[in-house]
Image (cartoon, rainbow, N blue to C red; front, side, top):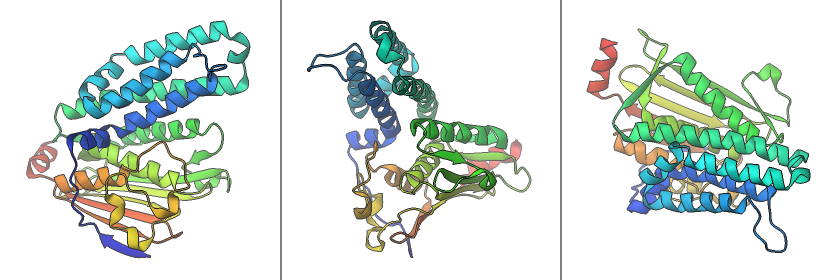
Amino acid sequence: MKEIEVQSAINLDAEKKHLLDCHSFINILNVIAGELQLMDPGVNGAAGPLQPAVGLCLDLADSLRIDPAAAVKRISSNEVAEFIEKQLALFQNSNKGAAQAVDTQESIKNLQSALYILKCRALEYEERISNESRWLCENQRTFHEYFASFFAGIEQNSKGNYRIQTNIAKTIYGRDYLINMAASGPEEDPDRICLPAVFKDVLRDLIANARKYTAVGGSITAGIHNDGQNLRIVVEDTGRGIPEHELESVVQFGYRGSNVQDKPTMGGGFGLTKAWLNTQQLQGRMWIRSGLNEGTRIVISIPVPASEQSRSAAH
C-alpha cells in the first residue's frame, strides 16, 4: 500500500465545473429515470404514460450542465416532483395489474425516496450558493441524523440487495455493510460540528464512493474533527483499492481506476475530483493511501479561517 499527497492541478471549463457541482443531482435523476423505465418500458416502441417523466429527468440533467441555478430552482419549487407524481398516477390508473406487481411497488418506494432526496439536495444547494464561503455548524445529533437518512436512502436504492449497519453486532457477513462514523468539535465544545457547507457534499460523496467500490460484507470508516484550528476529514474502506501507479490520476475529472471499469455506476467519476478541487480552493491538503485490493484511505486537512475561529469563539 502506498500513500501520496495529492499535487495535481485541475483545470475545468464552466460546463465541467457545473457538472462537478451538480453530479449528485444527475445521479439521482438517473435513478429516477431508471425506475420509471423499469415500470413502463413501453410496448412495440410505443411511449407509455411514464415516458414524459423520463424525458423531464433527461432534460433536467442536460440543463444542470448549462444553467444549474435555473434547473435546481425547478427542482426545489416542486414542479418536478408534482409532474412525476401526476404521470405516475396516470400509469397506475391505466395499468392496474402492473401497478400492483411487487417489483413495481418496490420501484415506487424507491422513486418516492429519490424524489425526497432530490428536493433536499436542491434546498441544500440553494442555501450553499447564496454564500459559498459559509461554514455550516450543527450539533452532533443533527449531523448524525443527516447521514443516517443518507445511509437509509442508499439501502433503499439497493432494493434489498444489502443493508447498511452502524453496529457491528447487528451485521450479517455477506449481507451488510458496516459504516462507522464519528464527528467532533474542539475540546471546549465537542458537540458543535463546523465545516464548509460544500464539504458536507464532499463527505457524502466520499462515503458513497467507498460503498460503491467495497463488496457487501466490507466496512467503511468515516471521521471528521474540527479542533478550532484545522478541520480533518478521513474516509477509509476495505474495498478494491486503487492501483498504486494511478493514485495521482484518480483526482482528474472523470477518471476511473483501471480495476473498476467493470463496475456499473450512475456516477461519472467525480467524487475525488470534487474533494480535491474544494480542498485546494480552501488552501487545504489531501492524501490518498491505497493499493490494489487493499482498500483506500482519504485524508483531507483544511485550515479554519480566522473569521470562523472568531465566530466559533463567540458562540
